[in-house]
Figure 1 (cartoon, rainbow, N blue to C red):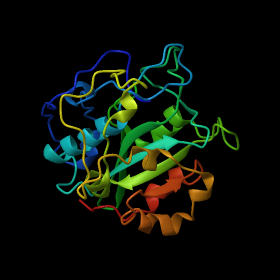
Figure 2 (figure 1 turned 90 degrees about the vertical axis):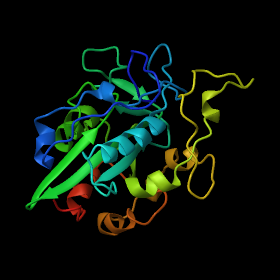
Figure 3 (figure 1 turned 30 degrees about the vertical axis):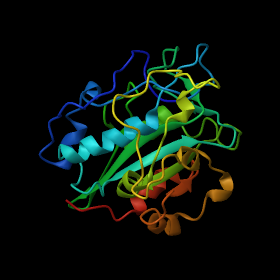
Length: 256
């Protein structure tokens, strides 16, 4: 799924400097190596040699680190975890470090990113944190949509992307993974797991990854209702490529 060509080692993330104001994010890119990023099992469909990465846990740890360092709101209310996939499990994206072409094109089965959506004196400040992109870290939302997603390229086709958006406070309470997708049929690790313990949900659930990956066009509702439901639904809401650019503008967002 998501990740770069260079191997990354799991462990405690290093501290990063928190910007003094939200707009500073656009002018002070953060070093992606400051965050926990562990290779593991997630099939890349388009790459000749499959790259296996564990983006869901990487983004889980990213959200925690953004909160811990003060880059995000103390409760993480300005963060949203986004699973990108579709019914075909074929997700074209650009500017990915694992891509073999100059434009970083690759086709994942799914990909996970974090979107930070803030409001400051009426100004909308939306940024994308993608640990596996060669775009600025973080990237302005509009730039990421234009350069990495390129929504017009695969509209109305089997490759059209869907986006499951989960409010980070809900995701951090509800997500769980036992890393079984990182093992082969004989039970051997395909890639070494992170050094930290598997993520367990607050209710004791040990694995619900597929519940976040699976999505269908039938899951997409109207943008107004989803802008409210995203704060309450355990599995968030599912957007299509048309709604995505409009969705975050509809959110009230924590004012700063």
